[in-house]
Length: 176
Ligand code: S6P
Ligand code: ZN
Image (cartoon, rainbow, N blue to C red):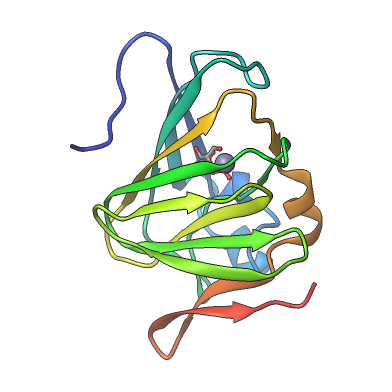
């Protein structure tokens, strides 16, 4: 009901504003913020080590609300290293946008709200932005043989950013 995962094998990680260096359009504003401020935490249950087949992994992400300049707090985002590995996102609470980008940088977004279910097709980078005033909580499911490619996003980013334009969350195209 809350998304909280507990029990043996659940691993918890935290990502602060410091851990999002380079991810926002306005890096100077990010650098001036409290570096210890929590951006999101993840509770993950991975029955098999990453890259090994034979299980479905799941993780709950608790993404805080807030802005860095005019850009909503976000997860780093990644491609799956296995190009044919999909993912499912199930929203527990809060509101946001799931940003999806193909390898040729076509970028679109789906509205996340309590109960919404989203399929991330194979070969699609995914990132979530919290556009609401409360934590955005969602559960992700992916096959255990999936590896994670963060480097492509670090180097080239997404084709669009979720920004506050005239008070409204808007997917704004971003130059490569
Ligand atoms: C894993 C899945 C999620 C993310 C989490 C944090 O395949 O997509 O569990 O790991 O939402 O995002 P990121 O991009 O920092 O790993
Ligand atoms: Zn993923």
